[in-house]
Length: 208
Ligand SMILES: Cc1cc2nc3c(=O)[nH]c(=O)nc-3n(C[C@H](O)[C@H](O)[C@H](O)COP(=O)(O)O)c2cc1C
Image (cartoon, rainbow, N blue to C red):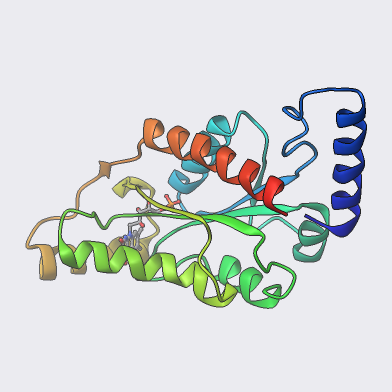
């Protein structure tokens, strides 16, 4: 919370106490949240929109490719950052944003998530997912309070030629399968994460 907002909040608390009001409703009020996502084929955008639904709309959905970095950092109080994963990497622009504004973003990124093909059912899968989430936390220098991974999707007909060729090679060489379409996006899990984030944001607002 910025100093200005903190003073406003403290004043509101004082007024509420003087008038014998409950503090409920003041908590987190005015906290502006930006939900920033990086996508290539749309499943991360869908997941981010479901998270926003869980937050009951109390977050602005922002495509990292379309936003102005400086303006976003100054306009919002808290951030949630998420990305798809392509050949072991999160969205380049998201990395660039987190790195170039890491000082201003100290303790203000409360949630991070990745949308990927790896699953958490094996030790190797969990390690890969941990590595993808670290690509978000490393440039920041701290772990956001609520981290999550989500299943993504591949629709073969939508892939660019180079992505299809890369995946065809990966599937035949490492999975011993033909490349096929799949969809493991999960609206329920994303909405639930959004609700959890709402609690985190409230807690953060009270603490600061
Ligand atoms: C070219 C390509 C490379 C991928 N590489 C990985 C990878 O290294 N690890 C992984 O877990 N998932 C990988 N995936 C799966 C994507 O993370 C998944 O399809 C995700 O839903 C993509 O997000 P998007 O729909 O927002 O673009 C890859 C997908 C594509 C198309």
